[in-house]
Amino acid sequence: MFDPDVYVDYRTSLSLVGTVLKYIGLAPLFPAAVALYYGESLLPFLATTVAMVAVGTALERLESDPDLGNREAMLFVSLSWLAVPAFGTIPYLLAGQGTVAHPVNALFESMSGFTTTGSTVLGEISFERHSRSILLWRQFTQWLGGMGILVLMVAILPQLSVGGAQIMRQEAPGISIEKLTPRIRETASALWKIYFGFTVAAAAVYYGLHLAGVAPRMDLYNAVAHALTTMPTGGFSPEARSVEAFAPIVQWAVMPFMVVAGTNFALFWYVLRGDPRRLTDNSEFRSYLLAMGVVGAVLAVLLFTGGGLARLPTEIAPIPGNVENSLRQALFQTIAIVTTTGYASMDFNAWDPSAQVVLMLAMFLGGSAGSAAGSIKIVRWYVVHRTMTRELYTSVHPEAVRPVRLPTGPVDEDTIQDVFVFVLIFLSIFAVSTVVVFVDGLAQGLSLSALEAMSVAIATLGNIGPGFGIVGPMDSFERFSAAGKLYMVFLMWIGRLEILTVLVVLTPSYWRR
Image (cartoon, rainbow, N blue to C red):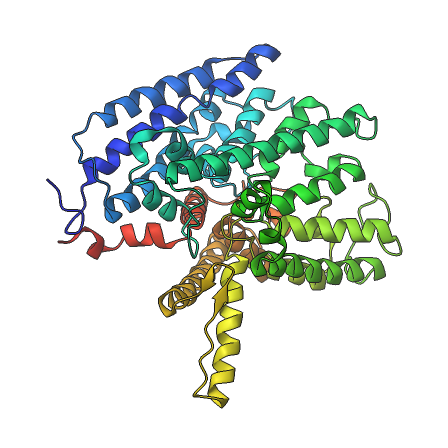
């Protein structure tokens, strides 16, 4: 029998990857039903289901140890988040529509979907260029990845419940995992039910605006499509102009759902059980709202005074001097960026550098731990702030004992060290990636500014979606080289798993006795 404390039982990990593929392989049947309704080809989706179920069944037959060690959990999670997006390329390739018919572009789009990044290589987003079913598959991949494909597997598969805590810890490696129920499987199930419920609520609100006659473009297809990418903080849209394509009332309606999506879903579990104070008294949640409020207020002032606009598109209502439009654009883009949803209510390439720099800084914030949001996350910045405050105090009062506290209790020193290590590694990879993107842009004849290159790096590593300049919210990442896009795929992969899970697997010491 393999000893998980000594070396890696990769057969166990591969066998579990097979189990994931087999069951996720049923997901393409949803867009297949849409294709049937609209009279579109079923082949891309049925072929994907057959391929995933066949390969998954074959991998499942590998001999494996029923005990899942920590190393096996890391390998299993890392490989699953590579394998599922890899098979997710099949519908794009078989459909043969647009830029995603190229293998590298298909992998980029699929990884961006499942990791809920929202960056895209689609050169043209329209129903004339792409079928409704393919665009809905693109939306659905984000919904599957939002709460976590492995959290879903833990919720529905008894064989994964034994190692469920380790799997969830590696898939969403925040500061801590809050066990809501005695059994981890029930916890995973509760989180997915909350996630599903909010998705249904979002679709109902969006479509309700259409039925009320105030949002004529938000038909049932668009309502479902956007609900599928609001709650996972994904940001894909079947509309080329993102949420700008809809009436202002829709943009106001989307904002609260983005806020919910960036909130720790465990807090809603307590609210549903009659304890709303667990949400309102939560210091991370209050810090999260405060961060968005401050950034939104700064941007609103800049846009209202006209100082935040370098140029103004003629097709939208005037912003300078318009309180509602200034506030809506500022709040919407702030919430979309902080929660890493990546929707756009306007092309913020029209903003001047001062407003863009504020938005750029917001990309490093992220939502709450236990949410669908990416980037560094508010809870880590909260720990960093509290630790720095403590160090300043104890430098004057060395005899004082001031523990750093979270809503769940005091934070031990090991956890504080982990937070600082993560932030340092994140910023280091961001810096290196900025240089890589800039060099790749030069090789492709792209004259990237420093802000554009940095935005590409943080947009992919932080799973945010759009950046500035050629990768703005109304543009795409298509013009980068194949090698550059593969590097961005790597950034999205490690960013979704919060870096350390993948990096540990890639170290030689991980594989040694």
